[in-house]
Image 1 (cartoon, rainbow, N blue to C red):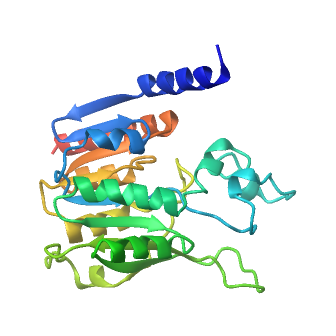
Image 2 (image 1 turned 180 degrees about the horizontal axis):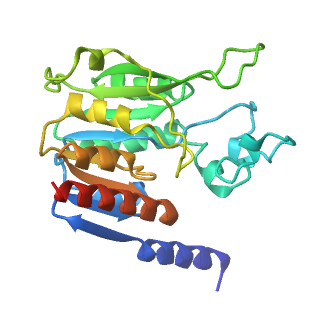
Length: 268
């Protein structure tokens, strides 16, 4: 068997080992690469996208993150199991370039009833999300999640912010039934302490966005589900949910969390 055929067979095997789980008629969880699996979603069937794709880290000019090796450091943070730079997952989560961004957005536009997507990103990626929006004649807003300062480096500005870009079209006005502090562009929510995923975002932020930009019964899509925070927020607030996650370990963590939330709600 040639190396080319071997790689092809391996890809087919990986694809066949992915699977879908329907927890009920309102919840669909998909284990697999969203670039493959999103094709199965009908056009104009999604009300809101809330997701956290991989970032694009370019700290070493000219050398992709995926080609770097772990630096020598005694930092517990840098060498922890979840954040270790040498682990395959962190490498895959650090090179989401303009090519992936534009392909991803093209698919999102296809499945949405009206374009209304909230996407976590870093500052390297912001221009590419904005350029795609301009090219597709859509509007965008940049929201900021301000986190407490944990590491101060006086040679440069501290990394105490993350960004959420909203890409949207006419007909997606924010709901007016929420508290007034929901409408600011800066979120001050505390980071997750005991993370089950290295980039886990606060449930409170996801709930705010879902309550501002969707209605009860709407379909929420998260193509990069991670450990399921968007799904938990959607179910908690009586929305339908479709989640995709390529990593089998995190897929089952998300499944468990969403099942637990569903069981809790069924008790009341």
